[in-house]
Image 1 (tube, rainbow, N blue to C red):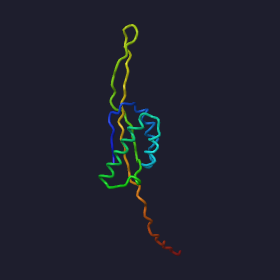
Image 2 (cartoon, rainbow, N blue to C red):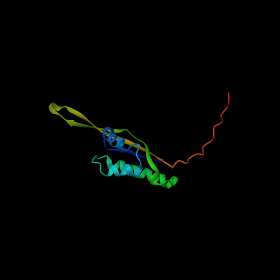
Image 3 (cartoon, helix red, strand yellow):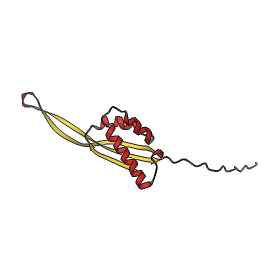
Image 4 (cartoon, rainbow, N blue to C red):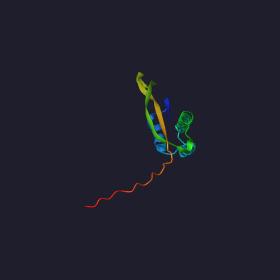
Length: 124
């Protein structure tokens, strides 16, 4: 139950702020928080989480209520190198960074209670 977003045109440092906000939360709660978030990375991450949920539903038949975000990682992607003209004929480098985001969802099934086993006692 994975989904990937490659070469998202925002720096990983800014995207990690949003990723850390939803890490470990249930799917409905994470989507609700991303709805009201005022960060630019909120919408692409929300779309990515919905994609991973659709993968889980189609491939494994799990319901969205039981899913939670097991891990979400933001890694460095490509770097576009551009130059800004400066005084005296010089140029200053500008690095436009990209991010690669990976989301893993897992199902939180209700645990069944195991029957209690009586312990054997030995006399000394």
